[in-house]
Image (cartoon, rainbow, N blue to C red; front, side):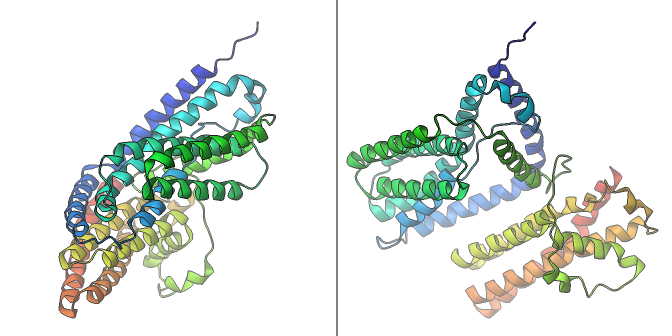
Length: 408
């Protein structure tokens, strides 16, 4: 008896499982601590942003800046196919029946990613209106047109995945065409830019369809892309909680050996050496630290002000320290580590000292930026406040969290 294959039911089951997993992990990310910091940070940004907009003149490059931000928000993001490794064997014979499955995947990916460009456009509208003189009435038309552009990017990237040509070439094509369309819609009259946009989108997509009409789906390619997409999400969640699905990446990075060479060769320093090597070699940890530090530095440089410098410094010191705490459990799955004849107390002390060193380096960097942005006295006050925060955070809060983690 032949069983009828139903791709609609397959999509419903997989998307339901995926949604449950995402919701479960998001509870760990958006906890009370992070929400409190985000509320303060967003409130401060809105206050200073509104004051900054009033100082803008028509020579400010608002449109080019919006083109860059909106292009990034619209172009980047892969299709959530929710495919699994065995599908390349068991579902390949059902490729024609999978058409509905992939259509749902593309439309769902659009709705999952559309919020980003809407937020960017919403945030940029005061700046856009102040510089260009255009009315806020444009917002709703732009949301619709950028929505079509986002939908085009999702469908175009999926169809281009059937071709054996380099992904980079098609990505550059989408970036250039998207940036051109965004610029036309923002800088000129919508009366003629809307028809031009529609012609460009439909003609380019039709051109690609003619190239891919007879081609089959590259299952291994789509599965690799889906695993990479989920791995990015798991790396983010792993900063807040243990993720069993995470596939970490490690690099030697011998040029950073000097960072942990000062650690003395002693039994009680075993974990200090281990945490340092893990930080340098594991992408998610060193990448997180560098990203947070760079973002904070950019904000402090371009959004000036004594109190704002203090606020950004403390927010990013907190975010860095808070998101590094789960690193304590990084080795719990390795049984060989339990053979170390070392008391757990040394492990905790080494970890707290390691976090303290990371935050002190950040605090000093933020203090130097504060000195450059303000006068020397104000900069030294920022540095002192940062170091005081690091002391309170690593001597009071981190030991408390470490104790709670070890009790689990």
